[in-house]
Length: 292
Image 1 (cartoon, rainbow, N blue to C red):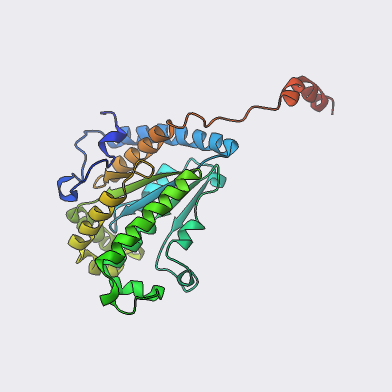
Image 2: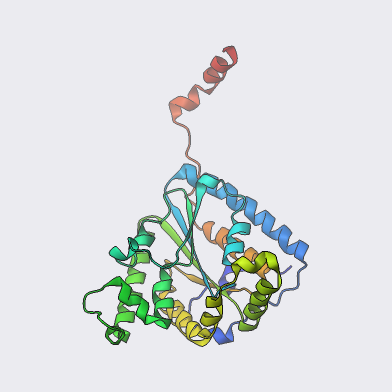
């Protein structure tokens, strides 16, 4: 199988989503993809153990994509070898009453990873410039000064919110959080097939919601706002990666490989060395344990 290069997926210039393929043209069997993913899973697990002992960086993995793009299963498969103490998953749904008493980024701030840990945002702070752009009436629930009706939500409002998100990400990266953002790029036809499977297979019925079909009607709007958000927020310190998502197995491997490759840039992440005094007395400690 052809090697995966993170540069092929990283957004460094303005992109047009309609011109980016949703299926990667690499021939590989299911077994080959699974084998490749297994190897990267093990490497990431070992890396997280070292990160935990190093205790200087946290890693934030942001996953966005249309309904059925495979976020849940990707999390399950890519991170399943992690020590549970080293990874936390947050799924951000409609803000609750407590969250609405704070600014829209508050619930994301408090979910940031501790040093030495990975945090995965399944849907992210970007919902605040995606879902709310398609449904601007949702913003009214935030009870913001000067926003009394949808008519008050102007292009200037969205520009300011994008700038706030960039500032948020710059702040956290400057304080030790490594940020990688992945857009699972799904075709509308593949989404249709996946929704149909949810209806045809009884064991998957619980995944289906009529709301999925309502949101599907806004496909073009979502693509427009995803494109705009990605173009305006893919930065050196918090890059976006566009992942072809029509093939779930390949998408999982690509994401895992990118995380691994990008983490290799942090050459200072190493296990701490023992104190010289402790190191000098290792044989004595062993002897003490052997005698008791």
